[in-house]
Amino acid sequence: MTKKNITLKQASNYLKVTDSVIKEMIKAKVFNAVKKGQSYLVDKNDVDEWLANLNEREFEQLALKRSVCRFSDYFKPKYINLDFSAENKYEAVAEMSKKAKDLKIVKDHRWLYQVVVAREELVSTAIGKGIALLHPRHFHPSKIKKPSIIFGRSKESVEFEAIDNKPVRLYFLLLLHDDMQHLFSISYISKLLINEKNIETVLNAKNEEEIYTNLTKNVLK
Image (cartoon, rainbow, N blue to C red; front, side):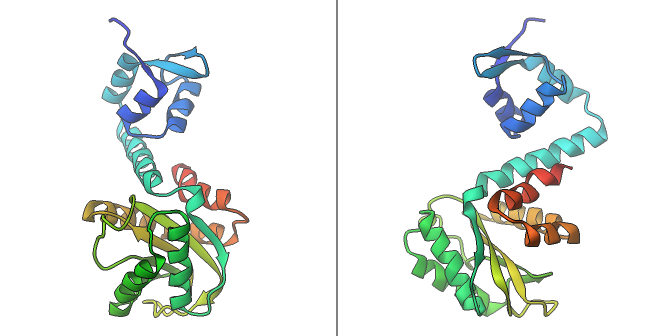
């Protein structure tokens, strides 16, 4: 069979995973690869053969890696707002809205504050265990530059009328463009944080990189 070499980026796009996942697979000799400059070339025939022979557990792992890759499209280390001060939920929403403006995801943080608070006043977005999934009531793709998820951790616990009556310290501000992005993100975050150990790790993380790792890379362990 004639070799059909593709780049590491092409391989990651083909499998819908991150470049780091492909690098790990090359290191584990899942695929044959040749180094070209600072990158690698992978034989696409090897990739197709590997896909065709996945067992059930390997397929589930691939699906998990793809979900992490998709979440990483919306969430970056710089999107983390660490240890801000807030005495109530309105101050917490304001801090998260300012972060969105600083990141140039939205132009007007006052508008974002208003639409998130309007959603919050309908019913609390606190899902329990000290976590809130902040978001506007409607999608605003014309106002939100790109689909993004901002994470925040407040210094103080904030009363948020949560379903379990627990105050909130962990916030996800979902700034997405459609239902598919929204439902995927809520499902991903909910499954991740159903584990009490993951919540504890995020609460105790010392910096943004630790939090980012726990919300993405550690999911694969």
